[in-house]
Length: 450
Image (cartoon, rainbow, N blue to C red; front, side, top):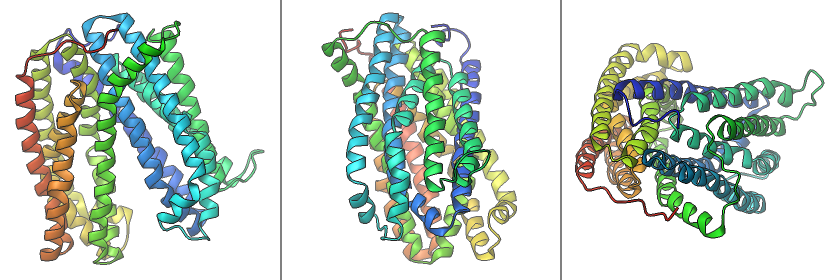
């Protein structure tokens, strides 16, 4: 309760929550880049095998992300209500839910490695490498899901610095172990792709231990009492009411990007490479709005639980202003530096030209994209996940995919990039209108009997 966000100026709270989140997200991006670099040194087959694992890893990661959002929502609202016992019960049961999900996912995953990856198009030359990686990864999935949920519980208490430090510790462990376990050295055996999986599992295990220690001894969020079955089921229900729609919305995005990539593939590998390059630059450009959206969860959850609607509205107003200003700043920077940034990542002049087109068109909509991210996070924090998933469906399936198909027929890759900008603008304006209506609705009492 020491990080309670229902008192004091709104702006400083948001800044203190967002800055550590930016650092944590940057650590995760570095984590993935280092993994890709060292596996790429092993050869094309190993890199292809790891690339095949991305959809499965991303899907399960998004499920864990959804459970984390549900956890943040229910715990933050309970903190806002001032009920410490309720906070502790939700925390312990969020971890039992994560463990249950882990055992189910690992069991199914280990039994379906070959059929799933054959369906994704992996050939007999790639499948042995995929098995090497995924068999270790599935056994270590507990270290992915449980720390993500645990860190979400810590953030719900208003502490984003500690989860970011845990993410940094995990990333640092992975970066240190990758060359040792993949290539061998300092007494470690050369494990190649198995080493990459093992490094990831060990790094996540470090984050699990750290998260549990913080939850138990620093935040005092873990109760020593064993929950009853009835209490557990009530907690699981409240978490899943928010978590499952949030996970579904998260999974819609990579699926939709896959469809967009297929449109661009019609124009050759250069178009896909240019899109991928620009997307990597974009992920860095949007890191501030992503961090702000994540930080809105604990702030809005606590204040919505405490029925401080005025503070929620003020946070939204300040958050939206920041998104618009940041979007404008990124549009100017990327517009001026597009060529230099693209050339840094890839020397091919055709790829550079396509990336420049993207970085000149899409950033004009970054402010609206930030508003959409913030609104979705706020609705989940309020315990209203259905509007969030409807907005994601409208954005990706209702706007982006149809407009991208039409744009590709009219103007090729440039038409697809224009569709991204238009769909961001439309979805951002729709999100703004929706959240204004939601904040005017009367508050309902907590549904759980805890």
